[in-house]
Picture 1: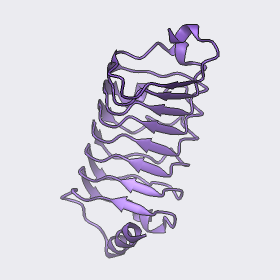
Picture 2 (picture 1 turned 90 degrees about the vertical axis):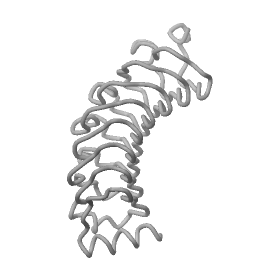
Picture 3 (picture 1 turned 45 degrees about the vertical axis):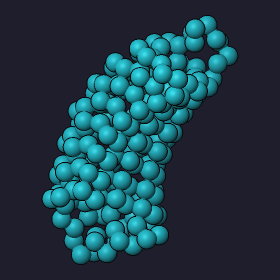
Length: 193
């Protein structure tokens, strides 16, 4: 049905008990905003749309590796893939998303380091309740909100204390996390702001 609607640029279908897979890439190529959140959609997804700016797929049953989710989406600004069954590492998953400002990948099966170095304009990164471990990577100077609670982090990047725009950081539940005194003070001040 979506493929036949040639002028369609926004699809809002949240909370409709939809099942199955999302439409093929050809149907999505002209769409700018997609919200299929809070349904029962499943399977592996690969969105290749040069016009897409907003993609909300949270609270579904999607699976697979993040590497293939957003290929060819260079104008993507907001992406929420939270509460699905995505797995794998984050390393190069969002390399082509140069305009991405908000990324939510909470409650999945992601592991490895919480790499977000390549997303320079990112202001919001919500990745709680995954299996990220080690030291999170450099997060950029534009970051306003950083939520990595309930992971397995052992350290934060040293440059986190230079992130003057950071308003909130949540690293609760990372039982092996060791902060320097400067980072500890910085985190407390960021949470209060």
